[in-house]
Image (cartoon, rainbow, N blue to C red; front, side, top):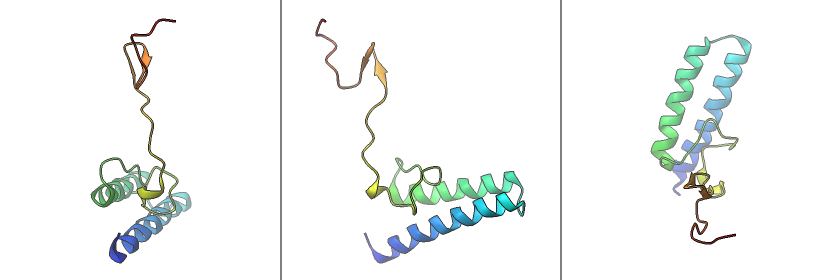
Length: 89
């Protein structure tokens, strides 16, 4: 990770905080805050890839490298992903 990427991730986190605070104080309309969050999400996805959930996650900055790998939650054919569907109980 380059220094520029690290700085950009930190700035995205700070912008998320500012948008949330302005919305709480009533300084911006909810639609404008939502549009700003959408733009933050677009920028974070450009930086981290499609799996990034920023700004809806709790990451202090837009850094998906510290997030644990998500386990598949999809159930396919009555069994959880990764389970052997041929075994009988």
